Length: 339
Image 1 (spheres, rainbow, N blue to C red):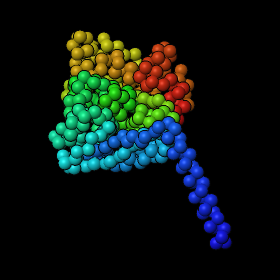
Image 2 (image 1 turned 90 degrees about the vertical axis):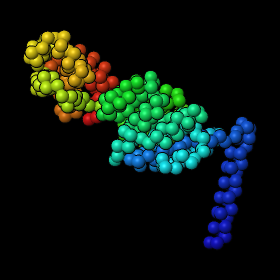
Image 3 (image 1 turned 120 degrees about the vertical axis):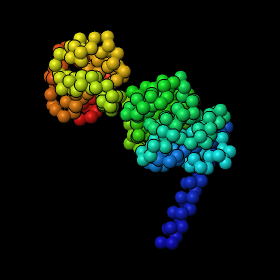
Image 4 (image 1 turned 120 degrees about the horizontal axis):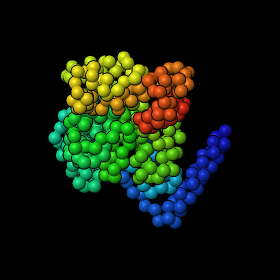
């Protein structure tokens, strides 16, 4: 038995040595040198720990796959608290601001963090932000007049606080070169895959997705968002109209009839409605109807033709066109994905 174990051990060592020799030869033939991409994940107060640690482990796994493919690049990842940034001299290739889940630190980030992010950006780092992390990035001013995304439920607040940012909450990822933003709480996975594809290659990204059982196909945040209009704007007249629309969305409603009900001229009504809700009345009604259509697709077995009439459309094709425009999927694709 001892002799057998010895033979197996020696065989394993020889096999491992041959495999390593082949890898070394491959790298030598291609004159490969390992280049490290330094990634720093900022563990700010309230940062979502599943995202912080999940990204860390995703990049370590990507390194393993890269090595198996004899790829020269590697991620060198570090998680750092804000308190330790001031004394740090590390120069990064990538900086990541994770999503937030238990605190409102992102609404008033420390000056030391903002200054550190600006410095890293000046030194050439790609700055990434996920969900509420986009607020921290916006505070630096780097997102002024640049496209960005955040969680769809935070988009209005981000727009109010940072009106210079070009917000598109329909996207899950917006890669604008030196600045990358991601939408929802779990879009840290999308960001991780995006970085692996960009700094390693798409093949490694797909292998990583298969291993983690993550869908690597392109998708958008609007697939998941709900229409939740504001009612806390303080305009009592518009609030009453919103309540009326909520109850009568399936009936024939026009701007003229809504203006008449509000006892305002059409022009004054239109101005007040946009100021209060952020939408014109027709767009508001359309989004509400499509939201109701989504709910019926998920909760019933009705055909889309029946649903279209149920939510107030007289023309099924017009409803289908509005559905695709707002949701980004056909009704059939939506039902297949979510039911």
